[in-house]
Image (tube, rainbow, N blue to C red):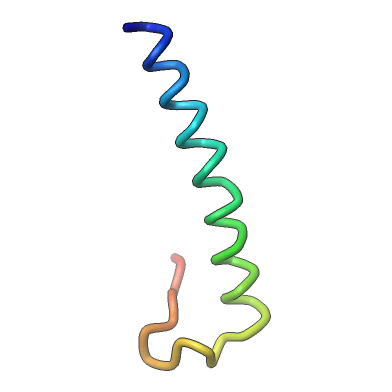
Length: 42
């Protein structure tokens, strides 16, 4: 199952990295889009 674990971690990383970057970009460009639910990163 080691191969599956490596594949899963790589897939998660490949999916999460652009997703997080997109959220940061969205938060940077349009801070008022989400209104009260705007994502605030520490």
